Image 1 (cartoon, rainbow, N blue to C red):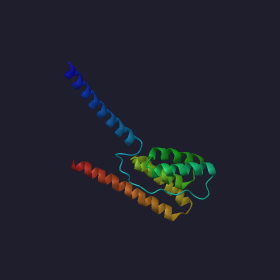
Image 2: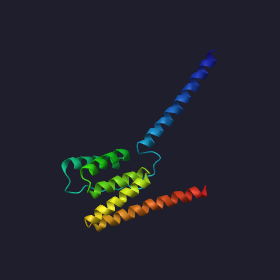
Image 3: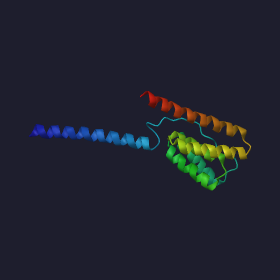
Length: 151
């Protein structure tokens, strides 16, 4: 009877360890780390003329983005966008974070909105940067499709 209880204890410990490892990995990936392949490392700095509350949210978003917490960054940049809807830098960072979360359709829409806002400000460099980001996003999609067709 003693051998049976020892074997049962070992089996339960192994199953518990496997379960904890699996749950931990899922939580880690869900929070914006782990298996997500980051496409964009850079972040766009806040504009000089940004009200204080928007600036705080923007800076929080940058910190979260730089530490790989893209979901939190998206929430912070969303707050900035709600308060300052004409801020292309906030839209740009939102789009970058969405792309890093592999939400490519939302990222594409946000990049297009960003390009429009940069164009309204006559910021050619901003428009060109968005174009390069859209090209990288499209290339990732092509790479993924090519990989899938080979399988």
